[in-house]
Amino acid sequence: MEKIKMDLSNLNKVFPDDFSQEQIAKAKTAFLKKLSQTAHKFYGGKIQTVPKAGVFGFNWFNVWYTPGVSKVSTDIRENNEASFDLTNRGNLVGVVSDSTRVLGDGDCTPAGGLGVMEGKAFLMKYLGGVDAVALCVDSKGKNGKNDPEKIIEFVKMVQHSFGAINLEDISQPNCFKVLDVLREECDIPVWHDDAQGTASVTLAGLINALKLVKKSIKDVKIVFLGAGASNTTIARLIITDGADPGNLIMFDTKGSLNKGREDIKADKRFYRKWELCEKTNKGQVTSIEDAFKGADVLIALSTPGPDTVKKEWISAMAEKSIVFTCANPVPEIYPYAAKEAGAYIVATGRGDFPNQVNNSIGFPGILKGALMVRARKITDTMAIAAAHSLADYAEKRGIDPENIVPTMSEATVFPVEAADVAMQAIKDGVARINMTWDEAFAKAKTDIEYSRNMTQSLMDTGFIKTPEDSMLQEALDWAVGQVK
Image (cartoon, rainbow, N blue to C red; front, side):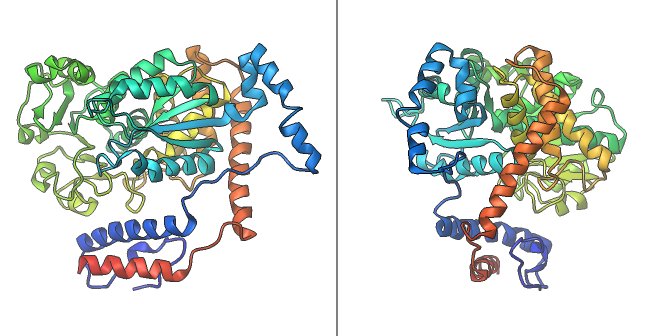
């Protein structure tokens, strides 16, 4: 055992030497949850508001506020587009959720989602140079049921304060309607990161995994476990990028999606799932065991494991199979078990395992790219452009079965991705302003470096305090006790 480091870089080595791989995996999950609880209490959350303009004397408040700011208000009244130049709107995202599907924990009440939404804001600032505000709302109607119309109305009302909206942790089927309506009826990008973000990064991982196993996206057989917002959007983007829909087989809690699923057809709220029923699963396979036979790829975003996906299912897959098990906080099967069953490439949504296929490398760059050109929406082709940007970036610096996508530590990936997305927005005709790729890259890089340097400066000067070593040790001792 090693003494745990503050940067947690040696997390696999701090548990008892007699722990099995499964015990280490469980202990890591327990440790991260306990440390998160303690650290959030230590800091009182993780986001604050900091001025970006100086106070060179108290008379400057007459500039930043009344009477001087009156000129800003009247300018914007005459031309609303000026709000992007005269306020922080052009670099500000509203992270909106009703907290009805928070990670793997389900409905956590509106306030229960604040930790996750603040986390999105934290990542946007540090990785993408984008400011963000957590907005957790109560979407329950008079009948006590969650009403998508309440979220739609809320976003329409607040859109004038933001350059983009990031939807998060909204349960299905409401998430489908909320996104589709707001994408068309708002004049700023409305992005559902659980769906489009996860889909973009998953596609990036798949592109590079297929390169390594020398298989073509148009030929591979793909099994999807889970048919929520994430997987249905992943399937849509994969099909758009060249996969044969007939080679895709998707399962929800009631079985495979196919033309015989009258229960899905009858419920108009699940129109996205019915679209996949009509175009996928050309063999009308109904058995999950049959679906896995000879499958090249598994993409699972379903019930947290570790036993949701059976080892015998993976053993039945084709040679050099690709397995993405991305449930949070515990993957449907642990990577070591999937490898034992014969998987060649394994990815999860977690950063403490190889191949983190997680939207954290997607949304900061994608939203930054959209904001820089003041896009009116984020199209599917913009999401696909981001996927290829991530895949190309990783390929240029080298990929292998344990390293198929960039990581959050690769700072340059975000301005590259932002520039590629900005160019696609211009190509798609949804950008308000034009710029070159080099201009977009330079601006994104400058803003991201500013955010990172500011955070480091606050740490160096003590305005952001370093947690006590005892906090880490207490979390570690607690985690070990939970597993023993």
